[in-house]
Each structure stands twice: as structure tokens, then as C-alpha cells.
Image (cartoon, rainbow, N blue to C red):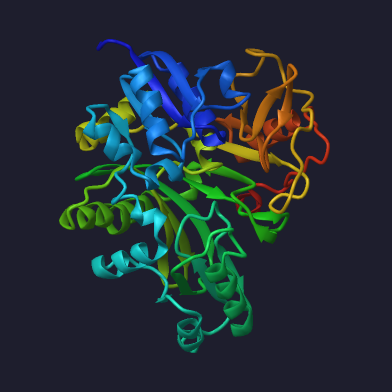
Length: 430
């Protein structure tokens, strides 16, 4: 066995807590460091301060820590070229380059790329002015989807029931009112109806290996009502994807992305997260993410039965085609406990009670921290999405849900909100 590695994880949310958790279990890891981490991650890893959106600051931490492997969790550091800079300095880093990450960081780039390479997606139009929006809206029936071109933390997609609503949404994106940053491009998109699927594949620049599928719950309210969020819960089961669908998505979506990026001179390595809508016309791509999702990662890591360092190495070394990724049979689920008011304005600093002491947890249930910190020795809320109560079951989804909600019933903080219907579509089919 090769020497054990010190691994540095960049990020501080629920996704990073799940990655740290998986790394801490690896027989190949000697130490896990997380920058900046959070209140829960601090129980598994040594946390160090960093501004993950500042390239120089991330490089400073990596230079100081000298890890054998750096794993970049969130999209923001990918978008500023952290992987490029670390590779230039001789560090092993997991994640795509800045150019390859455009599949996520620019909706316009992704749509035009899919059109160039024959990847199935909704009809669209890229607009740079409000006049262009008004003109091109005439091509679309309603509802119509308006998307901000850049990163928007899950809040840059507006489904509009009239052209007037669409024009108003685009105006708010161009002005910066909606997201706090003025967009230079807005994408209009045909509304696709169907069931969503999150498909994850490991890519090494040439090869693609399917990992698993999950289903996210983006709307804040039960029955998929209310505004979009970064995700209120997710589940992963064997039944989400037939072997035929798995093969089709690998061949017609993920591998086409890898082949296309290689042909265009920007090989894609890392995790390709394909947001798929299962329509009557067949599977169609809604969006790409170029990293693990949140809260899907929490559910996926509970099912992963392959050493995660082997997964990271295969992508970096170009050996993904030789790796067989194994997932535990059954189902896993993650239910998000969020702050009152989320996804709008919400308070922070609320004391969290009912969490088990360090190490006092069931093997098949784990509470991942999305937005927590420690204040005066107490664990407090520090974000919109606060905790991800996650459970796995070899029996199936209903059992995993029962475990997660039982654990959630022991936890409380002022204003806590969560959805009680995670997995409802799958349960209807059982």
C-alpha cells in the first residue's frame, strides 16, 4: 500500500463535511485538514482559516500545509482557477481547471457547448440586453425559464408564467437586484416538464465512469412549492436509474462532454454532475455542475463503498477506466434543517440543541453540518442551510427516511424548518 496521505479539503459546507467524513474513513489518509471548515467538520479534521474565493489565500494555505492531495469542494474556487494554480505549482489537486469549469460557471457556455456536441437539452437563447430579451421571448411559449449566466448559489433560475414576468426577471438579473451582481448575459430556456435526476460521473480527461444517481428537492416547501433553494434534501436509491439509463447517460451525456472538452483543448477532470430532466422526449440536460452537489453528496457518501482516495486518484492520474466504483445496495437520504426565512433573509447565531456528542452516533445515521459555527463553546447556526441529517439503509428508502426523521426529531434551534416529504416521488411508486 502506498504511503498515507495528508489531504486538504477546500470549503466549509455540507458537501465538504461529507467529503471529510469519507476521507477520515480512508485507510490511505493520515490526516484531513479543511479550509475553512465548520463546527461539525472540526470534529473530524483540523480546520484552518481561508478565504475560499481568494486565489492567493487558497494558495497560501496549500503552500503552508503541503498536502499530498487537495480536494476543491465548492464552485467559487474552481471558477477563479485554484486547480490551475495548484497544478502549476506541482500540487495534486482534484477538480476541473477554470476553463473546464465553465460548464458550470457560464450557463451560456454550457448551452452552446451542448449544441456544438449534440447533447440533448432544451431550446434556448442567450441575451446580452433587455431589448434582446424582449425580442427573443417571442420564440418561447410559457412557462419560460430565465437563467443568470454566472454562479448564483442555486438561486439564478426563475420559472416565469408570463412573458412580462420573464422580462422582469431578466431586468433584475441585468441590474444586479436579484443576485447582488449584475449579469452581462441571461439565458432564456424552454420549460421542460418531467422528473429531475442528478447523475454523477467521474471524469479523468478522457474516460467517464458513472458513480450513482440522486434526486434533489430544490423548492423550499412541501410538494415542491415555494422558491428555489440550494436544496432541501436528496435521496439516492438503486431504483432511480436502470442499467439501460445509466449506460445511456454515460454514453450520450457524460462521455460526450469529456470528448468535447478534450477536442476543444480543455480536458475535463473531476466530478461531472449532470442535472437531467426525464421528459416525454427522453432525458435532457438542465445544467451541469463541475463538482459534487449539495445535498446529494451527503447521501452519496453514505452509500459509497469504494475508498474515496482511489476515486480522486483515478481522475488525476487518467485511470478512471480501470476503476470500478461500488455503492452500497439500498437507499440513502439527506434531509436539510434550514434557518427560518431561508432562502430569503434569515438570522444566524441560534443555539443548536439535541446533537450527539462527538463519536456518539449510529453507524447508519450521520448529521453533516452545512452552516454551523462554535460561539462561546456552543454550536450555533451560521447559514441558511444548517444541518443535513443523513441516513442509509440496506432495506430501502422508507427505512432510511424513518432513521433520518427520527434523528431530526431530537434536534432543534429557533426557527428551524425542514421538509417532511423528502423522497415523496419514489414513495408513490413503491
